[in-house]
Amino acid sequence: MIIIIEQYNVELHVENECFVISDANHTRSISPLKLDAFLIFKPIHLTSAVILLAVKYQVALVFTDNVGKPIARIQSSKTSNHALIRQQQALFSTSTARISYLHKVLLHKCKGQLSVIYNLEKEIEGSSKFLNYKKKLEQRITNFENNNIVSIEQLRIEEAYIAKLYWHCISIAMRHLMPFSRRSTQGALDEFNAAINYGYGILYNVVESAIIAAGLDSSMGLMHALGYNKLSLVYDLIEPYRPWVDELVTTLFINKSILKLHFMNEGLLFSITKEGKAILIPALVEKLNAKIYYEGKRIKRKDQIYFNVRVLAQFLLNDYKHV
Image (cartoon, rainbow, N blue to C red):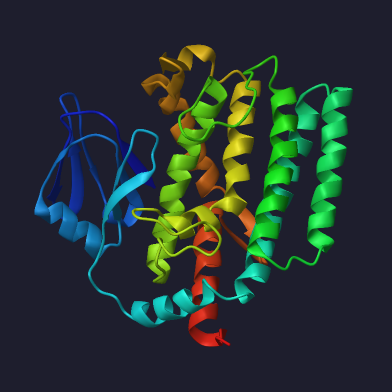
């Protein structure tokens, strides 16, 4: 379970080995065994006992910006074999071996994107323009799967072209529901992008939590550029799971669960309102906790993220040999 705190004057303390959350109107007690994380959007009052209990039960305390991207995180100081894993990660991050790994990661994303498009096609009356872009998208992904990718730059070019076709398809499908002309990531220029960006923000936290749990360095990317205060590996490893948010948001718009009145704008930029978040957040948490079949097992979606990140960490620790 993820608890999101996005109002002022909230207090968080501990009683009887449980977290107690209080505001002006309510008090709630919850066992740490039921929690994965607190996402904290606003300043709150918390005690040191909260930090110690969270560390003991590996409950992430994550402080985010207004769209849910992690800014700071409290975690245990115990490092286990993290140093060795990160040494291997540093070597892998500059090797040509990472190219085939990233190719698989992006193919996973592409297949998820196709699934979103196929589901949209069932829900809307597909226009000839939509079907044309869908056909181009299918062909481009097939080529991407079969091509011999030899450089990071080639990966970036292919990913960008596929993304362009993908968002064209979605834009056509959404034109009568929640129109948008293009993806806007550095500030949402419309309601659709505001919802997508907010969903991605929550997903960033899940991916970063998995990276930290596996002992990897979230700032040492494989494809995205390194930079000060930049979670490059999070941006790399989130890619296969973005379509989960895309599918959820488009479904909420199609079902008219989220409407234009659930957004507000300041100047040219849009954001989702508290009422809109109250619809989007539970729906996304439910999707992340829904069980699916993956690698022969029935597991929660979010556990698929943890599984894949652990596989990478174990590969680096036990199998990767730097040449």
